[in-house]
Image 1 (tube, one colour):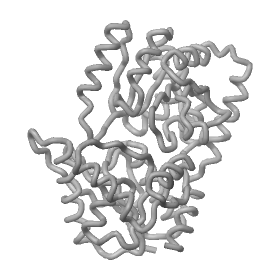
Image 2: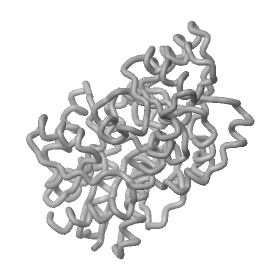
Image 3: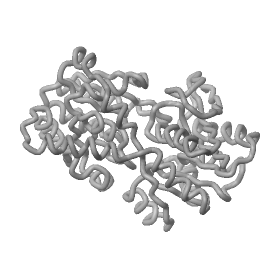
Image 4: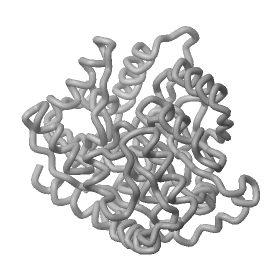
Length: 356
């Protein structure tokens, strides 16, 4: 089959990581795959080399443009590019932006769209964009049962669960020694500073934890400067000094993860939790917020906490390593990560493509 996958960014966000790994697995299964994406900030490639043809649509910066206007302009630019693309047997959008662009360019009939998680917008144009991408595509997919249940409850649609894979061997083999030499015993958070990642609660927790906090990642379409200011003000008032690395080169990320003494995952909303799964593959203890979706994906492999105090207590316990359950939890975590194969995820997609 000729398959076109589209994603909203070239940066290492969860949905983008998923798109590229899925594309490569579909090629291994014998199909022709092309990946389209929006490129901002002068990007001319994805955050890592990709083993499939790619097409990037540049989104030039416009001074003073609102987030809502930038997203709508991005959709229009991508739609214009897609309109000139050749026909595909499968058109598969990985987010609401690319679903809207595919719909504008080629219509929604036959369009597949993956719902990684559900967003909550307040700007009317973005609310409409989000709604359209859930209502109009011919087929929705989800990466977890919890998100699929949200889709059914909110929109009355059945969305098959295709899951996520993880490059477990890459993280299991990583050497974290250089990062431990740089930061000592550290707590790692991947995903940047934004409301959905629960950063305020993480800072409150770290005020009670005897270890530095390292934060990696963080590229997003949205303007979270006010939230970041609130996070840094809180950190300053509590005596927490987070080390904010920003996006980390792809070849350095496994070592950074493997070097951590604990991995904090206090997100308030997730669709699966790929970054936490990578930490488990590296043998790093994970403390996650107690969400239904994370219970579904990680039960028995991570520590759960409901609030900042609980996160602090579980991080401290993980750092001390005194819990008799820790070795078993590590074994379970490595096995869990190793069970998520991108080739199996690709086969689940192909089953849907063949029936849609």
